[in-house]
Length: 137
Image (cartoon, rainbow, N blue to C red; front, side):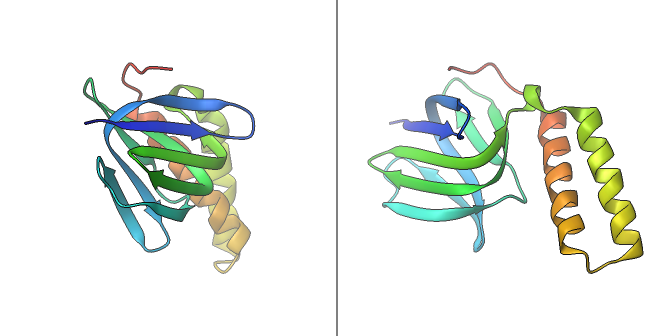
């Protein structure tokens, strides 16, 4: 039996469709959700992509920078502050943000804002590099 996946941000419904598994990063580590998973609510840590293993094959990676995940009755709901599919990532902008963050960290290794900016930029670039399989909407 497949999971129903709903990924939404304040601006849009990013993805809705079926999956065999969803993997998301929480502060406690990566967690995988499959059909029959016990109810779960948690925060998402924007340091790794949310991976949606599509029923028709392939894995869609999404840059989710922060948010929450809820699982109940084979429905995985991801509520994000900001989420980007591979095809929506502005690669030159992400590269520039990465370079600015690296420069800031070179002068102040303890700069938490620069580290957060670097993490976001690297996540966006990783998702863009992974590409996107055909997907339902």
